Structures are given as structure tokens and as C-alpha cells.
Length: 140
Image 1: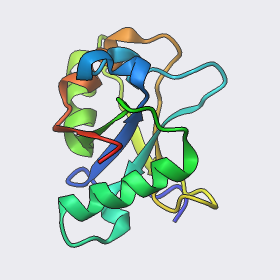
Image 2: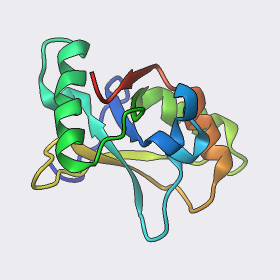
Image 3: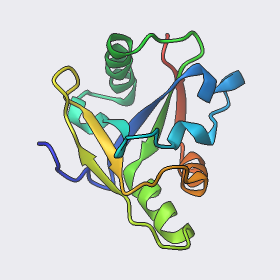
Image 4: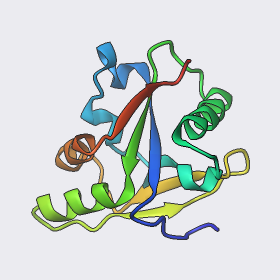
């Protein structure tokens, strides 16, 4: 349901456009808010209710293909909610406490957001990047 906290043990994905993953290397810019954004857009894998990670990634690929013009080198990164929250809490000067909340859209029921970020916060973007568990191509 909208606004529900995603449990720390769950995983989320983030779409990284080709410019955020040159040569397959994810850049911190993939985890920075754009102007007028209040959260970093992610997808909640547990919400998809798939049987394994492979089927979750396949489902997310379909969501991204429907929403974005997917470049040949676009990537999907997998993050653990608790790892992201702990890393940022422990390693930011203000002990930033991020919220990861379900934020479904009409065309994307697993859509969620990482909240309590600020514009141009490269430190937090770099910390999130350090927690990346897996990187997959959006195109199979």
C-alpha cells in the first residue's frame, strides 16, 4: 500500500540509463535526485511476488521497457534496503535516516522511492553505490 515502509531484508532495483553506466560501470549520478524530485525512484522486488531473483529481474525488465526508451547499455542495479539505510546512517555526518517507501503508480505497482535525500548530495549517492549487490542489463 502507498506509503508502507519496505522491510530492511527486502531488495529494490534502480534503473540506470546508459549515461549513468558508461562501460558498464555505475556512476554515483545514478543515485542523485533530479530537480523537483522528492524521492529516488526504485522498484520493490518483493512486491512482484516472483519465485526467484531471475524472475524478479525479468519482471522489472518488462516494467522498464514499458516506461523508458531503454538504451542498449542501460543497467538494473539491485540493492538491499537495510544495507542502504545502514550505510547512509553510519557514514553521513548528519546520520541521515533514509526511508524506503512503497509508492505505486498506475502503470507500475512495484514502484517505490528512497526518501530523505537532498539535491546534489554526492556523498549519499556514493554510499548507495557502494551497496550495489548486483548489476544486470535491462536488455537481455
